[in-house]
Image (cartoon, rainbow, N blue to C red):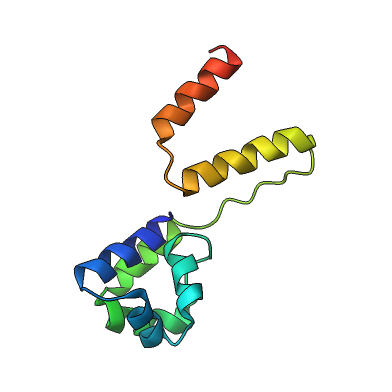
Length: 114
């Protein structure tokens, strides 16, 4: 989850709102909002900022700071072998699903002999 998505989720839960209620307030689909909250989509564009501030009672500064820290990392997988790319993608999925980072690092260190 991105810092931006985490901010939205925490604020939504603190206000006792459903994803559906927030997505309606923003004028976007429920599934699109869910993807944003999970960090699977980029932060909302500036055109939605006032709606986001109003719906989740956030300041412009909170939104901008979290959005700036959540810019997606783009990795060029082209130079990698198919197996190397698959390993990276599986690790990314595990992290996204909430795998414990410390445990993943221990396993990786053991695999490469560190």
